[in-house]
Length: 187
Image (spheres, rainbow, N blue to C red):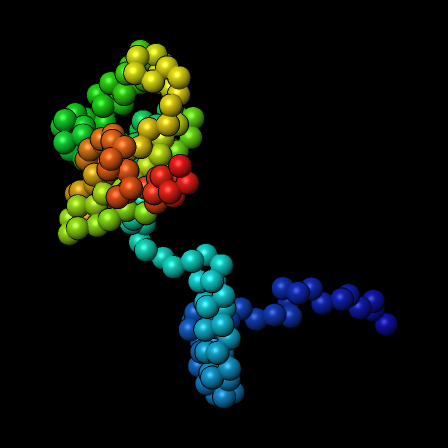
C-alpha cells in the first residue's frame, strides 16, 4: 500500500470570491439583523463616549486661544499661523510671519510660563476670550507679573482666528474674570 500524504490547506480549499456586503445578506437569511444592528449601535455609542463628539476639526474660541498660546509657549509659530487672522499676520506669508515671530521672541527674551483660559462670550462672528497669562520678557514684564488679557477672535475661512489681544485693566476685570470678583470680596 502506498504511503498517504496529508492534504495541504491549498489543495483542499477552493477560492471563492465574496462581495464585502454578503455578510449582511447572510445575516438577513439567518434573522440576525436586529441583533447585529443592536451590537453595532452599542459599539458606536461606546466609541462616542470614549472619544467624544466629532466636530469636524473646528475649534471653539477658547480652544483656539489655548492652541495659540500653547504654540507660542513652545515656540511653534508654524502651528500658531493658521490660528491667527489676516489682520494679525498683516497679510504676510507663513514663512515671513514665522520668521518675524521668532525674531520678536528672541529679541525680547519672552517666555510664556503658564496661562489659564476662561470661558468666552460669542457675539455673531466675533468672540471674546479672557486669559490669565504668566510670562516674562526683558522689556515690559521682567518680574513675570500675571497679565489679564482679552483675546478678540473673528470667523475667517469658517474657523475662529485670533484677531487682537489687549490687557484688561483692573476696573474691567470683574466682567471677564470671575476670580477677580471673589478676590475683591475677600479683600
